[in-house]
Image 1 (cartoon, rainbow, N blue to C red):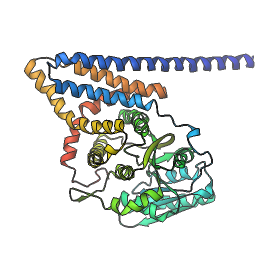
Image 2 (cartoon, rainbow, N blue to C red):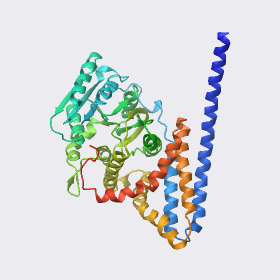
Image 3 (cartoon, one colour):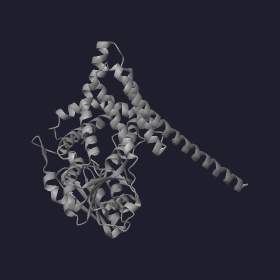
Image 4 (cartoon, rainbow, N blue to C red):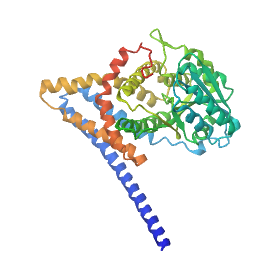
Length: 439
């Protein structure tokens, strides 16, 4: 009897798995049909544009740019045969932290449990002028880590110096080959270290970005929306860039650097100024820029995973986005002076990705306000194309994860296109404001 029940349960489980696989396969088919539909709509919309080739060209380039990210990411598939299986460099985890008492102990303990020889890595944690219990939590994590044979170095700064100085100090203190930066509210998976450092067996790799997933995705709609956005931004966009060894931002939640590459540039990096003001944010994008500028490759490790916490409050979220847009503009502008040296396709994609967001507010004004008021025509082609693009984002996420949060991700695309596009001009106007904004 029990044997029969067990067999029935197994059959039921297999049926569910098969059904889910079929659903994801169907989602993949719909995904490609939608891509085709978007391009058809863009071509048909030239009639609605009434011969205004500039706006039609912009619309077509946006669709082509986004779709090309998905297409190129498909070809990025690093395999074990690409790397030296015996390569195990020495590593220092680096964790600058301010007022992260809630998470910092767990952050350090997750590193302690990394599936890697204990004698080949250590952890450097900097308490950057915290006013909460961050230092106490660091010291407790140090005590617990010692019981597992892992050395944790705790540095206590009484006065806040900033994350960039903290990252630089960790690099200077370390005597290891690889520096692996982890945000103080990010939890790495046990295999993250091993899977990330293998990329450095290739001598020209200077930096590696890991895959960030949202730890608090189920808190509310805002966090669910961000969770899909994070996944697609890494899985599609960073994979596409990594195909050419040119990931433009090794994100701070999980990123590794070859110490010998970044050590000589620390003084210049920590003292960076833009328009006469010292740069205090955008540390990850700025450091990645310097690695690329010096001719090294920056790649993406999709199997090296960290779970990070995102804002669950709309006000904090908007402040974070403003800071990110300021650093995006500053560092993308700086990269314009050397990115042309990279692969031709990558260079064209980069410059297109820089110009299109700058034009977006003007196009939105023309498309949603000026033209409808003057012609009396509702921009149905625009909204149809936007709807299809939002579904493409959501189905891309669902195709790889099978997660029902894909609908939230679809909404996020419309939110980014219609709401956050207006934030960029303001961010550029406020670019000399060096305040962090969310602390």
